[in-house]
Amino acid sequence: MQSFFSEIEDPRVPRTRAHLLTDILIIGIFSAIAGGKGWEDMENYGLSKHDWLKEFLALPNGIPCPDTFRRVFERINPKAFERCFRRAWVQSVVETVGAQVVSIDGKTLKGSYNREQGKSALHLVSAWASEHRLVLGQVKVTDKSNEITAIPALLELLDLAGCIITIDAMGTQTAIAKRCCEAQIATQIYNAKADYVLALKANHPTLHGQIKTWFDQAAADQFQGITVSYDERIEKGHHRTEKRQVWSVPVSQLPPLHNQDDWVGLQTVVMVVRVRHLWNKTTREVQFYLTSLESDACKLGQAIRLHWGVENGLHWTLDMTFSEDACRVRTGHAPQNLALLRRIALNGLNREQSLKRSNRQKSNRAAMDNNYMLTILAACLSQHNDTSKPACQ
Image 1 (cartoon, rainbow, N blue to C red):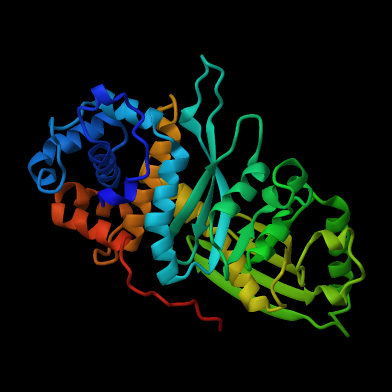
Image 2 (image 1 turned 90 degrees about the vertical axis):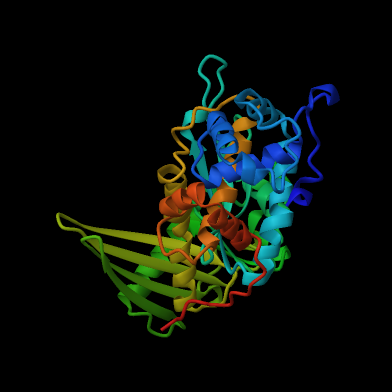
């Protein structure tokens, strides 16, 4: 495990290195898996597990103090740390299980702001393998910027050939390349031999209005003479019934679209209608999508549905299980590095399937059971194949 972090440069002056960098990083990961929230928790975990940790860590001067953990994580290069995580851990897992639908979405770490220094809260854009519940990478959104400038940088870091990339309307901008990397998001994904499903909202008013008008007219005529694929699903749960209808039409069936050439590889336009019946009200939502995939309403509906797994599977879990929004670490690179520790922990907890409990209970077990902690690490690093795919019925 120590070899995974060999390329991270130790930011400390040599004479102050009383503890090995790899020891500090590994204890930090163990603490995060066990539910630790900060520097004191890292020290407490190390002290509680000292005899066990001594079996495979050097620990030349015992367990580091909280200030040592803080100083190291404040100064470690987050890009190098994330690169080790992505290459040594995630890439091997993705190659074996196959990340088919990858959702790109952002999350703000609400407690990371610093009012005295005029520092806004850290905002991260993450790639989430929805079907396998794995974080594939993260990129910090720079100050005075937004998600649409970070998405191309994140896509560039990941090898997503053969995957389906889903992005909500925040990232669906054809002109962002002119401000960041001279390539449109759609072009970047298509050139990477992946496919895209991009939400289309009022951020493209002309194109959105054109597609909406066309679908309204086609639906009124019951799509007569039009090659259309249709799928319908009804789900019940949490005192709610949701009906989702998906229509997909080859772009060749539509009249020339506004700036159509900007969307490299565009093959299909999709309309999704969601009707939710709650105990006290009924809501109806209509959403349009552009995609490089062929017209298959079942497949496209599944990809769109999986995109929203990033909210429950990643963002909600980070807040509920790891209390991410409540974390007030906000100096140096510490917020970004701690966020990565939490995502490493989440990947391990999600991959470990022998204990059929919630992630919180898995975390509690790992804190008390050294063997189970190693089981989580083994699951995160495993090379077992998982070729399961959702059935389309």
